[in-house]
Length: 436
Ligand code: URA
Image (cartoon, rainbow, N blue to C red):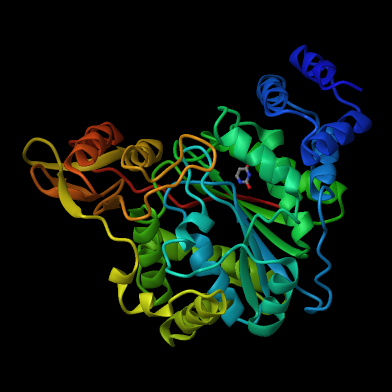
């Protein structure tokens, strides 16, 4: 078999066989397929797509490209949650300690930023000392010991996804339903959890911009899970505007801590409650959403959820004093007000999450090349989002930048992100649909 033939086949829209997909993933894993051929094939998939068989074979081959964890020694039930990527999505930082505090073991594998979206592992890098490159043995023994772990993509688990993911990030080949589905599901299967909740993002800040496409991605992943005997539940959630108010690594860790303390923005709270209650109900720990919400709220209000995050930070070598002292994390040199234009009362009509992400990227918060270092300190904190009543000349966001030039670039981009209305606008719901 020759890689060039697979590229030609996919370029002309032909379906791959299982053995072709196995050949491809073996070649990616042992590096016998060069990056330029992989990127050409990825682009062909973006244009031509893959059917359900090809997507399931790809997922299966990627999940078996390294070790597949057996978590049965932890207990009968181990949970994992995955988001398809968005802007300001710090849900994992809240969800993992919260659910661990509720008695559900959380074995979470997360990624770095991809395209315009942020990654949990990059965010955790803002906590001094925090180590996410855990070995498999360490990952499992930590879940056994403290009920949770957040690990980065290791060479041991789904290494083919690690390589493909990094390549897609810099070749404009992220937005493809079969590639996203195989990437997410291969990691989830290799990581071994048996209670999997998927948060499929939808809107301008996500890879799937329409509810229709996001629902198709959710259905594809549920179908792959079904075929590979790893049932999953997927929720489609809004990512037209950023989730919460903070976008940028340190800023998002701060917002997650505030949320674990029982505060934080209402959409982030609601999403964590919704995903958390799905997990509690699926695990048989609560019988309905009302009782699950009560359990989760009590954990936040009693301080147990925050203590759980402290335990996680300490276990992974991080400085847990960041919980009390945010200045221990990388901090931008300057804060600038970003103002509502004009004068008089208006309402925020639309807020483009992708533009907010691009503004942060212009300040160095995202990568433009594989493996590039990023600035963890910079970002944007919104004061208001869609539906808010605002006044011209008043601040609607804070820009955290290291230089005046970066600030100017971010400000110009942020100006494109907001549109206003002279009449009242209703805030959109965060939860759009669920697929199981
Ligand atoms: N998250 C992943 O893990 N993979 C993708 O391809 C997109 C989002």
